[in-house]
Image 1 (tube, helix red, strand yellow):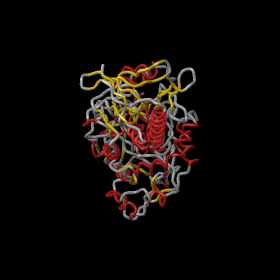
Image 2 (tube, one colour):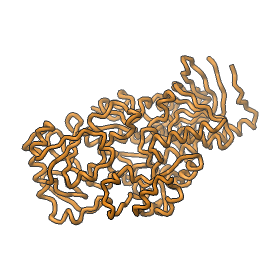
Image 3 (spheres, one colour):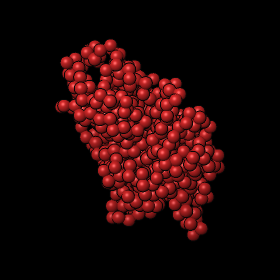
Image 4 (cartoon, one colour):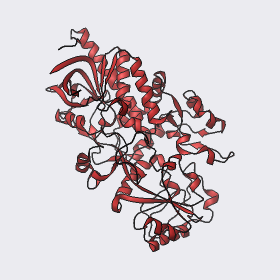
Length: 512
């Protein structure tokens, strides 16, 4: 078996993996990145993402220093963004994870978020406001104020596709980074609690790639057997929003090598997507099959019944658990119902859907194959519970406190308006899994911790391979941000150890 030695081996070429590679290169290390996908499929889950990075900032003036000119049209429209402090960020994170997220990991992500954004900008990542994600500018009245959620205001230009194109361009400019495509890693090379490298299948040849290792190969969301084992009944049948390559193989190999499992192994980021979405992520669509305008709709199941508070909070703080609620319904299918007063609030992504429309709720039920009497009663009962001044108080840009408590149904905490202006439109949705929450334990230096509580020598991890960040739910943009912060940290620390060892007499020469 052929062996190649380098300073740092990065397993995975998504956002976390490439930030690790770039950080290691900055320190002066030689880097090999092992990507299971072909070059045309490269980029992991990050390429499928909407590109939002949750970062601290002092408001719009602070963000302006980062923005590309693509945001000028929104700035000219008078878009506003409140400051997002470290306290705000931490509160949102802990609220969505019910206070269980590792405070040390959260604090590091929050504290280093803006500096990491600026560092990525220096490497060529282009930033813009996320307004295009939420609003169709052609459907917004010229005089209407545009308010972006402070924690979800910034995204990579071109979303995940643009993010990864620019990170790969940065890696390709670096003459010390070599990316191997179609090169799935299959084993860790270990000596007790010391990692020596990775075994990789490259062009039908098994190769030992020796060096300090950064695992950034994602979770197990594309593996139906592991989903069923850890997430439970029915999860083997859900659709996968991202890459087909995140099979959990190297996560399992890390556990086999003695890494400590940690976090919410029965939890995952899962959202409502179009019921006709492909079974596995399609790069021609990326995240365009997501359906996130449900706060302005009624969400009903196959029995014509509401089953969730659609307006619990801002969509960016509820969408990652909404898919769980949908999956729990019969056949894992639900229906978002809008009327003509709410249809203009749909995200641009709904343009990829084929809606079902009808002049009455009864006819809509028939068209959807739902019980006519049950759906009619659901809508009528909800409408009766809506206050007479709901339209006057309604504010789509922020939680408005316009609530309803319909008898026998879940409450709706915000954006509760009657569904009464025909024609009515429905979008069938199902559950799409994005990534899993369980993973290996790391410390504040991104070192992987063993089951005996000590760092495994020469092994670091970042991104979705790591657990203890998210429990039950998720704040939009926190995943990409933690991947970049800890990817940068892991790459830096792995390179420093490698170069220190070099100076102590180790070799990095290629061997036969």
